[in-house]
Image (cartoon, rainbow, N blue to C red; front, side):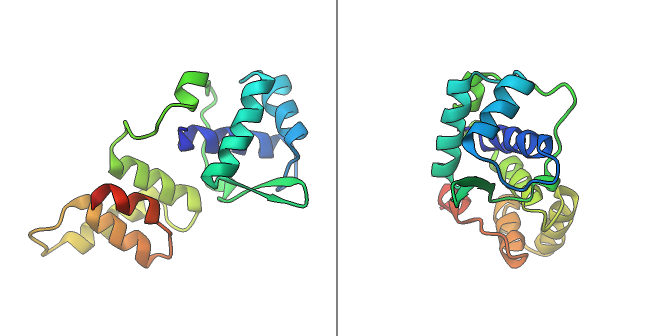
Amino acid sequence: MNKEMARRLIAIAISGRRGANSLTKAEMVKEIAFKRHLLSTEDVERLCDESLKEGLLAEKEGRLVPNFTVSGISVPLDFSVSVQDLFSADLDRPLSDRLLDYAASTGKVSKKEAIRMAGDFLHGMSYMDFETALLAVLTDAGIDVSEFVKEII
């Protein structure tokens, strides 16, 4: 599943429920399928199930709660989604792009800050690549990047 696209859809659903920080599955379907007309009801239910498996959502007291800072997600005005893109693997994007998007979605650092910190970390290092430096500075910032470490090793 394309996690960045899923984060945006979850952020859209949460922002549609003013002041709420959690939704039921029915509210998610209503917001994404009926109000925004972005996906079919079956696809929204699949999105919820996949997001729970991937750790983007947690279930608390029968409600779905995002495991990321929703305010850190920017959604373009012309945002659209295709089912094929949403449920395809996210591995076709470069690791550094996915790391930067993930870091920004946590709300702890912005993309610009992460790039600057990695650049400072790389200064004077001859045999380290940017992705490894980025992993190091994000870990220092308290961001769990364990799912990305496997791709470098």
